[in-house]
Image 1 (tube, one colour):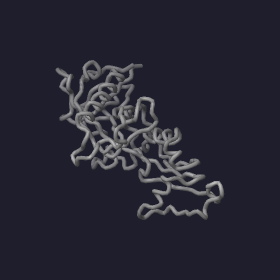
Image 2 (cartoon, one colour):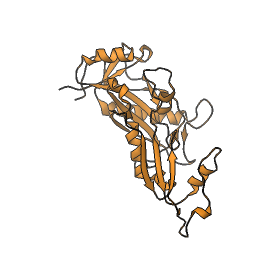
Image 3 (tube, rainbow, N blue to C red):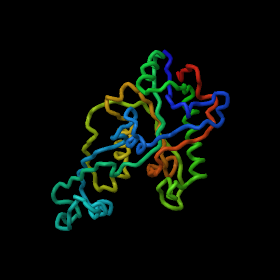
Image 4 (cartoon, helix red, strand yellow):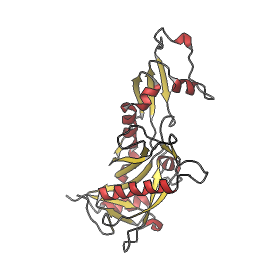
Length: 267
């Protein structure tokens, strides 16, 4: 059975199919979709995570958080044993994107039956859409455009670095793509770690991020969303990912031979 990826878009962003060599596409961000006024698209919990961490030992990151204004984190040397570990079980609750970072998003819908397009039209209150049939080429076009745009425009309108990273380091664009899973299960999770810093830098932290990046409440299930997520990293094989200050971005790139006005399946 053919499968289709469909992008609904306002008329001002609808492609000119006579020339796709410099089509302007809109990328949102987690921050954008948390705060957007459109009640259909807005998700206040977009990309959020909530964690209860059992921490064995303090570290500079934990100490830094304890000194922030209004912090509930308290401990002193009397809380530690001779090994520098907490004598009693020490739990830290993380919420409100305390460790979460912003990332670029492109969202579309997956359908098996073209008749379902009518349902999506009604849901999105939108009549204009196109088909993505070469997914890899489409993803790579956005990736290249993002990379080029960051090189040409490293600062935002407030004269701040768009990517928050160590000076002198390199920035690469990496990402993931997957279908969204719809669940009303709590986004709070329980984990254990040696130190807070170790957790932030660990594979466990990345797994928590990725699981919640592709989870939305069941009220959005009509959208049948597939999302492409892009984020800056220190290198192609690096675990370290950088935060961004973008809200949304309009990017021009060559989308020839990967999108279509007429129904065209990607499988």
